[in-house]
Image (cartoon, rainbow, N blue to C red; front, side, top):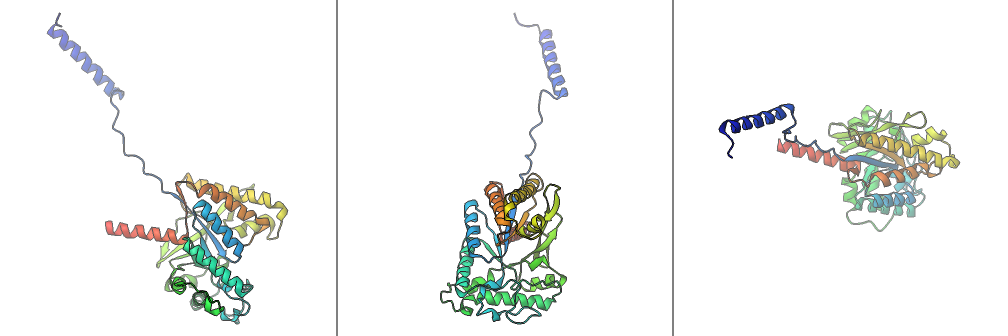
Length: 342
């Protein structure tokens, strides 16, 4: 039997009332989904090596990069491109010719092998930076002194084959030496106002001589981007230490070798690196910088920790282990694009 008109109206009204009530309660109709949260940037890790002397460590670091997809920065000390016979090519500010705080290459053959490692590393996408030459503390140097040191580095790198009488200079080597080195780190991380005045004129795009209380975004001034090795918590009491192998070496054993404790020091170092990484990876994702030398301190504890750390984090899809040069190039390319787009 057809429903009476009044009954149909009442039924419709009740249905409408029910829907209105549900809507008012917020249960019948959900709001349309909002815009998705912006994706986090990839976590950047920048790993560098100072002085870059031992051939075996060149090979070991390059092998680590090949396993993990990382790219490193090698801050080269140019005295390791001079043999005992050619050391007089270098004169440090305020010093006599042929003086160096870290010695020179052992032989012409060793220079040739190191040049080959530099060439291979550069061809694999690694960054070759300057650590000056003789590893002197430049805290009291003038702008002219720093400029002299930069000039010595460029001259010796560019002419390393001819200076040492090595016949097999690769094609394009001199162009590489003049153009590829765009970054600097001061020996002992000892910087002064004069250094920062000299860097732009010398054409350096970045400097990595700073120290910060924790990871920080690198600022750019006068055309030079300034990086700082962070202090990170380490050890049972989580005391801050500069994230560099030598500083850990001094923390752990007072700067004296204790190879019997290598396992303990490796674990402490790895734990500190991983905690510093996790803090950024889960948080703001500020680039994390870690510094090393080619010297195997405390039985190789710090390199062992590095290899474990890099093997875990550099292979992550949302992590990039890249060089200082590549980070700066990417940032500046992004700024140029933003300026054009704006």
